[in-house]
Amino acid sequence: MTTVAAYAAPAAKAPLERTTIERRPVGEFDVLIDIKFAGICHSDIHQVREGWGTAIFPMVPGHEIAGVVSEVGPGVTKYKVGDRAGVGCFVDSCRECDHCKAGQEQYCTGGMIQTYNYLDKDGQPTYGGYSEKIVVDENYTVRIPDGLALNSAAPLLCAGITLYSPLKHWGAGPGKKVAIVGLGGLGHMGVKIAHALGAEVTVLSQSLRKKDDGLKLGADHYYATSDPKTFEELAGTFDLIVSTVSAPLDFSGYVNLLKIDGALVNVGAPEEPISVNVFPLIMGRRSIAGSAIGGIAETQEMLDFCAEHGFGAEIEVIAASEINEAYERVLNSDVRYRFVIDTATI
Ligand code: NAP
Ligand code: ZN
Ligand code: ZN
Image 1: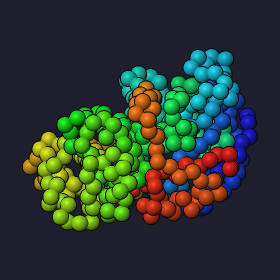
Image 2 (image 1 turned 45 degrees about the vertical axis):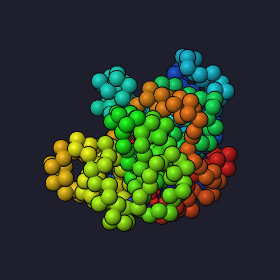
Image 3 (image 1 turned 180 degrees about the vertical axis):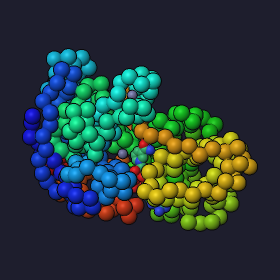
Image 4 (image 1 turned 30 degrees about the horizontal axis):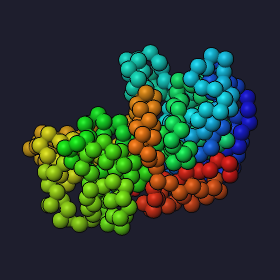
């Protein structure tokens, strides 16, 4: 076992504070990663506050992990010491179900082992990226391409893949009109990726406060959802809408913005149910769907895609002592566009 410094919430809703945790010895197929940067995802905040139900404490959040391999087990083939590696939202899965075999470990029917707030196969709680080091099976890691800086690559491990996967699945590309609801951590990656895929991109944000940024990120259009005229003007416009909103939103008005047969894909994970008026769904054969992160192979594909197109996330690098303040800013939609912890400050 190795003792490493970490930032943890000792109890639900408690501020995060410095502590130490134990990492398991490096096994045959494991890599030890010296974590350099860890992104702050809104999911970290939902879980620290027990917004999704009972959680495991102390909790070390963080599932947007970028670092450098510092030790490899004897069976490791993918890495050598010094390689750049990333870890996302899960660190293991059953490896036997149809989804695992298809490279869609995020839909593992045996249950993927989440990077934190979960019990590992040995029954021990998992601890996430707000820490100095992590030990992970090499099959549950991805390579960070040389073209990407580690700090702006970290958020790709959750925010990036969570948007890349549905944008690909629902065919975002040339000739398609795509709207992204919410310009936060996930949303800003959605704009960059949908634009790079060749789609015509519209941001639907609560206000026009971030319009200049949205257009610079690659959006073609930007509308405020606080303005009722937006919903009149854009009725029947989109092939695909991806909602990244962290709060419960009434989807009725948004469904009406879809073309016939269009899809509203929700990736936001609010703590309360979402409501929708069924008539715009029925009358337009429209669908509402959901999507969770992405598998390891698709996460690697997304990283390579971002490197090829020359972008990572827009980030604000913070010291570990600023985590609690950053949480408040995320809750106030005051993030531009992802906080990333410099783990050297833990
Ligand atoms: P974030 O950075 O806080 O962004 C969320 C954005 O939603 C905000 O920036 C804001 O955008 C908008 N928003 C917030 N409150 C709103 C409200 N009351 N009404 C309308 N819009 C509102 O959060 P994030 O890290 O991107 O995560 C977003 C959600 O996705 C969270 O619930 C998170 O848990 C979930 N998530 C899901 C997956 C998955 O696999 N499906 C993966 C990661 C995260 P504007 O200021 O532009 O309006
Ligand atoms: Zn996340
Ligand atoms: Zn499985």
